[in-house]
Image 1: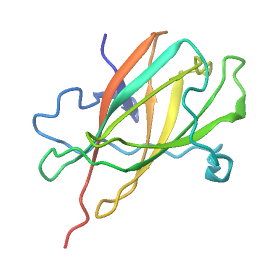
Image 2: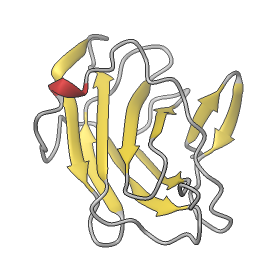
Image 3: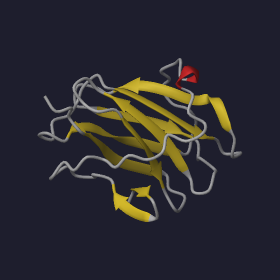
Image 4: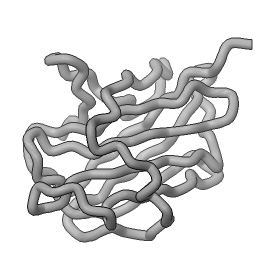
Length: 146
């Protein structure tokens, strides 16, 4: 199974194995962006879709610990719900993991906003064309030039 982010009409693979550490492409933040709703750091948001990966620096592929990762999505009924706006911090290996319900919009997608010191913020989306039970991907951030 291949997980991808869509940019325009072309599918670009997410960095599943960070060998060249190409920065993750940005994607529109969307019309439902409201980080004020992401006031909690929950464990899981529902059942059916496991999301996991790492946040890495494009400079040298190092994992970024303690990075704030916001995410939001529509639920299984196709509506953006307050309980599906959340944030979490990456662990010491730059990893993140959560379970959620299926994002039932076309195309199915989950929004991400990633903020790390010394790196440009990244607004992007995980987008898939078919229903899956698990998605693994790395989010690679561009360092801010000194």
